[in-house]
Length: 410
Image (cartoon, rainbow, N blue to C red):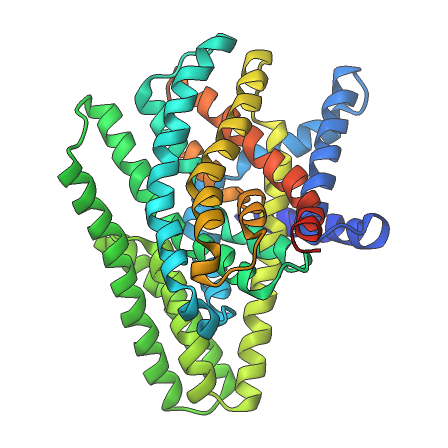
């Protein structure tokens, strides 16, 4: 385990240096692009019987990492808490209605739109997925990734109000997406479709329970922080909140992602303002910014190395192109259209719908959920489709979001 972690950190550090020194892309995009290019180069050289050892070593490293376990049980709690800590709560409170509507209603609607489109489109390219698997794909691909969104939007010069809505949505829609994914998975395995009441109760338990636990953890952390004034102890308390809180959420069967996002928001707003001295605030901010940056870079390097272990056939590539189109159409219908109609009423500038549609980036959470599916012939297709959407989202949408922002608001 130590050797694996060391290898991942060394590769990430080298690729981050290469990107910073020679490429100059945003860190998330740059390290993923460099990782993918090196992986493809290793595959090409090995195919020509040249430099077999580097390809074998890289593939062994990629296969050694249980991506689903590393992200869902390790990185995700830290990244969501770090994202919540730095949210502007006053702005989030102002846009709470559109944020919650997009995170909950939008994610549910997108799941069914994507699932229905894929069930209709995939047979056109010779791929067969049952409706249950199409809905699973819709559930795992509909939530936007807070890690990708936050890292890439920071350099896009999007208006603060638009950033607040899209970052707030991405923090909260993961819990909804995970709950829908679990429902679709259980229904597919059991062969019995859940009723609307069962769907509602599951969402209430997972999402509502996660939010309630997050508030409890946030307020408990605030109480502990306000009782001491020593920055190393206070940093340790926030770290314990994340690790212990996520484990507690897992054992209570409520949404860990939502709990961590809410706890981060509470700590970032109330504790930073009322329970921390200036020096403590600086150390806490620096600690969680470093955690966010390091884990973000590692995550995107692992995503780039996925080409070494994820086999994609020609038909699956065509299906991936259809999945990209279906995901963008669903995003436009469930997010872009409502925002275009209601932007003035909720206080967003005209043109926000384009940024919210194109800036809905997918990332590691979608890949992790796809990899968590049980073994079977349809699993490989879902993984391939997911990877195609994520790569397009990060490399194409991420690289062009700045241009979309300029066109929308100039």
